[in-house]
Image (cartoon, rainbow, N blue to C red; front, top):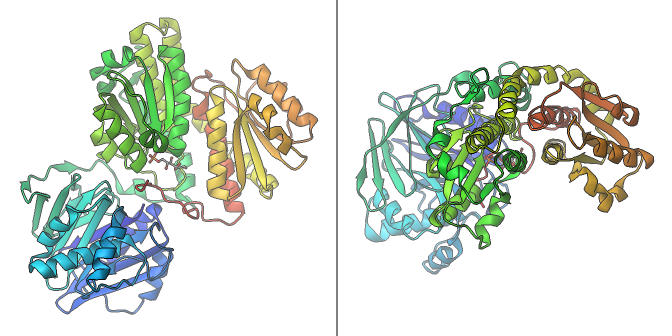
Length: 612
Ligand code: F6R
């Protein structure tokens, strides 16, 4: 949540910052702003709305500067408005700051500052922290760097902050705890951002700043320190990402591009790991801990949102193939109750961004209690990846559309490989079934490409159903989490109320909602429960609901009960979610577009939820 960008070097800072903010808009788009410093002083420009709204107001303005910081906001403290937009300026007008995170003890600090005569222009926790820093700087007659260091020792909460000082126009001070920060190293220039996407076209050499570290950045200098003022050696990493991966490449929206990338992203995820002919799955991170995973008394999966849905599918697959009890927890619940975690328990943390605050804190807590943490993460070098003992990347590439699509199927691909590998090693998955599943898994990318050919059909369906006020999504077994995911996608993108339910559970309440205008989407691909799902279709049809069913080729019964059918290629029931999710993503996308919504930036949402 919130995207931050900074630049210091020989180029004009503003164009670099604005371009970076556009790339980070997926992290929030309630307001945008920049602070630019040069020999003439400090200038701050900010505006409620998207980055483009800020740009419009700056046409014709002299924005010359070689150092600056920029912010795109997802509102926490204070409504979206010009006043609450970042950057904020300190009371004396000399320092500007941007912030991603939440300062939990801001009220106490604010009271202290009010007593000292400070007044506040915004409702934000950020302005409180900034004036707290300014106050320390003035009272101690210290440098900004020292003042920041002293201030941060009193801060409870999460932050990534960037500050510029009117009297020091070539320096940016940065610090992080809990919110991400990447520094790009160029020749005589440095770039700062919440993720690597604003940096990638200028340099591939980056430093991921760790929690409780500060950076003092000038065009020719990068000094990294801990909060105890001890210098740290920056660990330089080479980015493995291409610019094309973060551009739309001819698609109308990132979401559509990412849906269509799935045959490739699933393949990328399997590549180098799965050899279906040889019947091998190589995952070094899993191999290192395979003994502990096989012997785990229990696996707990923690995640949020779409990643939590992937966890539910994984629960079914792992219990089936590995015979290990699995619990799937919302990270936000897990971290605040007092969960029983025993030494030897394995925690699987699933996250696209690798920065979701609830998931991160949940695994930190479980780690303290002796659990082994396996991270299934998309963003390379992200906080969850670094906190985990081991894990496997999903290799889906940057996911920019706010609604998660390709990350979900890549998570399923990785989790399936983990389950097959562990189950086979443990002996709970028989050799023949293991080999067959390896072969079927290898065919998923090609089958996903087949499913995408249904795009036009689904677009027509979207037109037909786009005005429905509610949708129900039903599925059983492996397809139950897919029903949840289909409903989540529709809610996010089209603002239509949708509920996902286990198909059989519908009788215990939601069936009361069924009328002749309620579309009911059945995720009903061929599996062990198919006959039961067909009975549930009968029950909806008998009450005149509109049935849209996602079925497998060769199913002759479901079409007789359905108003519309989407027919998928056959695969093993364990693997079916990787295919059945795709038409649901397309349905949500096309309904959102048909209703005229900005599907890449749905209202109130942000891609990376780094606040709790
Ligand atoms: C839904 C969506 C969110 C995320 C959730 C977890 O489309 O994108 O529900 O899945 O915020 O995010 P990650 O996977 O980054 O931890």
